[in-house]
Length: 138
Ligand code: HEC
Image (cartoon, rainbow, N blue to C red; front, side):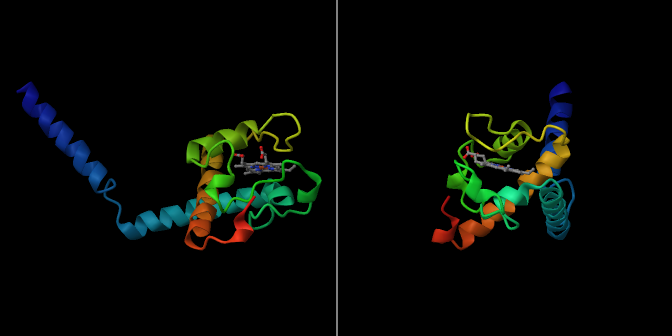
């Protein structure tokens, strides 16, 4: 009996996971777009563009002042701390406090804001993967 209820339970959880908890592909795409847009707004309102550039190409107004230069977000290989969502969230929260690095921590942001920012940067990584070119080098 216990084994049976366990099997039923596992089946329910698995089918939930497989169907993405009942969301249609359109809904998932909409949620994704909304998260990217929130991330883009956070990117602009928190001044990331001053260093990383309006479109994240590492070419902001102040970029030339810094060495190492602000990361160009289009190529995952440019992320020294790692291009995964978790790594980016940590980097944005804690900064890169190695000596000489201008990347300060943004630890006032909530986990959701950090996640939305990382999702926005993922969309830039994806765009860079689709049309790799020399401009995306660090
Ligand atoms: C004062 C300039 C400056 C501002 C403002 C700034 N950054 Fe950075 N950022 C840098 C520099 C310089 C680096 C490169 C550090 C390195 O290469 O180690 C960097 C690196 C990064 C990295 C990649 C770290 C790695 O190598 O893995 C991420 C992600 C990042 N910044 C996100 C952001 C976000 C998001 C914001 C806004 C919330 C922001 N940065 C604001 C200067 C800045």
